[in-house]
Image (tube, rainbow, N blue to C red):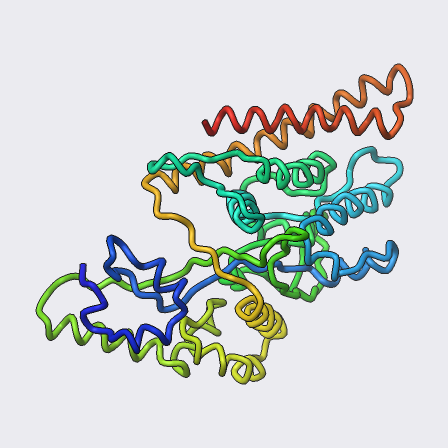
Length: 357
């Protein structure tokens, strides 16, 4: 493949976000050129959230931290469960994450701890103290019923009312509908609002970035230069903003972000306007995280995604069974219930760690 440094000057490259350029570097060569980038955004079914908030006092601002989000997830499950007092344990999920792997990866890095083991160039997970810090509130909310643990994309439960808050790629805005259809086939229009990713209290504002890039295969210099000139044209601020705002992606140059607000005002969809307002806030306030280029990165991600869901789902079932058995003999105190939940959380953590190691 062609090294883009052959056709771009240092001055030209300085106009692009360095994190986006760095992601395309392989062996000190710029082989993948960024043309449109995505990041992780929090999408909220504001219609259902507002109903929940009206009865409970829940504040949308509390979704800005993971601690606040997970606390609210437990509250939402209890609130929905109470709606049907004759049906036990039918509370709904509040939150769904498309990338459990990214939650822990970015979370650890944002709190100053390496997610991947330093001494393993092939790739393995460190499972340090900060990972455990990120695990506890996540597992607590999941075992309490507040987190969607099934397979599939985060857009699915928001389309059916199975959850009302999600973390997903900004590009997934294409699949978030302005209507929700419940299990009983009743539908209603909804408003979907977008927000920057939550952070940990005391942690850095860090967010995953990924997206689309172009490669040029080696040929004659004339053809290579023509391809590079096309990419220069595509990533000119006006052209790039017009292109990305149709797809949920971010522009790749600093100047493009400067003109982005004016383009956003012209968008017909309130959902897209909300998305690009969230993207603008993300670019202004957050640092973009680039995942390491590990040979087994995809394998680690797939194994982690599968097993974290399985272990948390198993822990939830186990906790419910333990509670039912114990309370058949006597009513447990909140402290006793919490201890049994912690036991289930610890077991799931150890199982996941052993599987991944």
